[in-house]
Image 1 (cartoon, protein in one colour):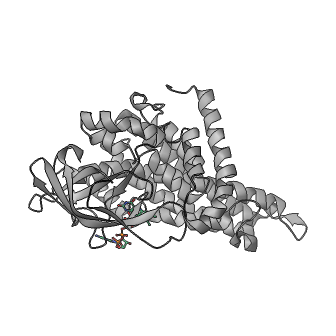
Image 2 (image 1 turned 120 degrees about the horizontal axis):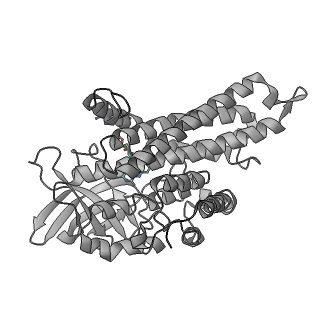
Length: 394
Ligand SMILES: Cc1cc2nc3c(=O)[nH]c(=O)nc-3n(C[C@H](O)[C@H](O)[C@H](O)COP(=O)(O)OP(=O)(O)OC[C@H]3O[C@@H](n4cnc5c(N)ncnc54)[C@H](O)[C@@H]3O)c2cc1C
């Protein structure tokens, strides 16, 4: 299937919203307790083309534009956070590092598998024993046509449902700090690959998180992405794009927070009047709407830049800005939503929508693809480089 017409695309967005706020919301009640997705969830993802739609057409996808991908992302992010986390990953970081940096042969072998989830990955950078980036301790040592990998990762998502793992490792501790790391796409069935348990999370229940341990894991050089020493660049570029997908997730969540707050404010009557008529409530609604509009504008602006040049000069900076601002948006909207709902918003099964779950789920966005501090470090570095200018200023 090729590109969708505008009408087909709008119908698809509606289909995804109905799936998310209907079936997915209902399914999540059990998942909050079991912390495991049932097989039905993955099957619904396949049936509704959520693994396929963002892929390039040459690999069985629909070839959606970046803007269209971000709009689909916004719709399913209105639903349960764990499912959002899985699908957000499926639509971007799952396949993009291989597509952008893999060899022709590896792409031909593995890219077609993403459309029906027969290939699914995890992205393993974070380590317990140091900072992310040049501080990585997991090593890969060349041995003929292979590399021997040793080390540990933690806080890694999707380890319960992946069959390949993107792993960032140290290949040359003596190189300059930009060229010490490399990235491999390793089959999880490789001897020496081990999954280590982690406790349950505050929210986003169902998406599997564990540690990983590699003991003398022998990996052929065909699984190296880019060249040896490209790992930092691959991480920065891949995470930049993924950061905007987190921003689109925050957009979907914040929009749902506003939508259900409006409904509640119309229905709730105190002292003879619906609270929507109170100026104090209207100020909150104005703040929520303004934040959401500003975020949507930033996300769409990024999509425009990305479509012109995925490796453009402002991609990294704008992506970090989108992610940083999107956290504030969900923070403002989450707080205002709970104020508008009053006490009932603090309970599960609120008839207007999952207020308490939205609030808990949103906290993961602070951490995924880097903390707010890390976004600020990126933005300030780029802002200083660009002399305080984005492209539209002289
Ligand atoms: C739900 C969830 C899913 C995740 N999924 C993945 C995944 O799939 N793959 C993966 O690789 N990782 C994953 N992570 C890890 C995530 O990317 C990290 O938690 C995040 O980047 C923060 O790193 P950290 O936990 O090591 O915090 P730390 O590095 O310990 O940071 C603690 C605090 O110190 C600050 N800090 C740290 N270093 C500096 C510095 N140099 N300067 C100033 N301040 C600093 C941080 O901003 C933060 O406020 C996930 C985390 C969560 C919660």
